[in-house]
Length: 131
Image 1: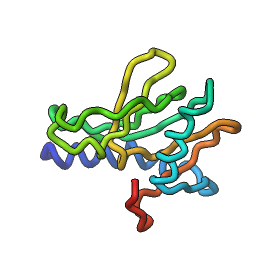
Image 2: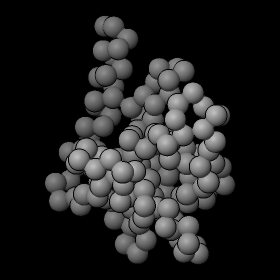
Image 3: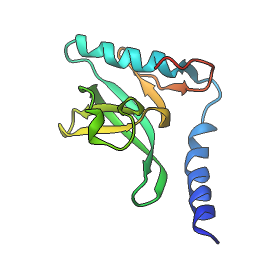
């Protein structure tokens, strides 16, 4: 089997469990999720939970679902640091380890916010593109 076919199959089987896990999930737009996560910086001791798909272009590995339970938004990265536009990235800090992290915005699949921390599915493709 070709490498791209194996990569696609592993991506499909890892994510299909999450997508078909619940039919009664709440949906939030991508721009609204980013806005609410940024506004949590103003609330002391508030954090959010983030689930996203990984994509490593150097090694060609992608599709692993990664979860960080206690996150806060950190300042954006400088655009001249990377080959791609800085607006494509979502930068955050893992409060458990204190390490800075980042992911592609469009690969964020679920997010939860304070008071109930119920996972909200992010819909990036509903016609809004103002993130």
